[in-house]
Length: 264
Ligand SMILES: O=C(O)c1ccccc1NCC(=O)[C@H](O)[C@H](O)COP(=O)(O)O
Image 1: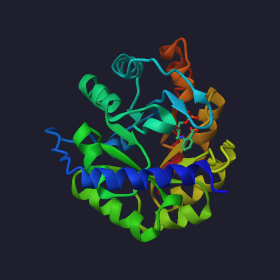
Image 2: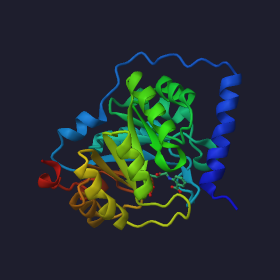
Image 3: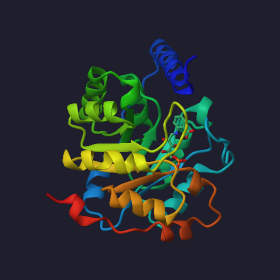
Image 4: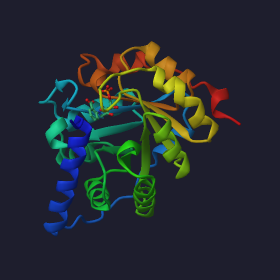
């Protein structure tokens, strides 16, 4: 039997066919993209990428009725370096409208968090106002990963190449990804383990890429562990979506970057 991730990808392939048949055009968004990579390079503290995540396959409903604009303003005022928006409808109750609403109110880099298998989804992300897209190495051949990475760069978008294991790492390194996310959540079993960042992080740093640790972070200690493993940033969804005091959560999660892991 296939995993939930397999079914998401099958659904995305169908979505792509529909998008292509619909001849919907995604007009270029009239703005200059904001660079997450530049923001990460200049940071003293670990960068926080806070996510707008209404629901998820692993947790069900998280906070489905939140207003994306209001939440984005809170994230920005609290010190977010970037905002991630889940745009998948079925699994996460997200939408491109959510992304557009975030774009309208903040000037931070926005990561379109979706399951991208085709260039047309990249056009749609850019058209809605994204600056960065997610490419999940485990669901793409190395050839397709390279193609999508090249295409996104050609239209001014940065790519967060997500890995979970050694095979994914090799793909990310083969395409010289500048920004690599290590997912602590196994997307096939939903098991979360911070040790994944500690295990793969040193290889990412050795290759000279910027590292983001993703998923499952709930405490300052988790952020400190990611920083000690060489992360320049952390991607956090559920903890912020359920926080009753987002500013305070940001303050707790402000952790200096471990500088010597970022040089040489
Ligand atoms: O979160 C899930 O259940 C999930 C299931 C299948 C594919 C992707 C999934 N999550 C996407 C993410 O990577 C997270 O939303 C992101 O890293 C934030 O995670 P968290 O802080 O644990 O909400």
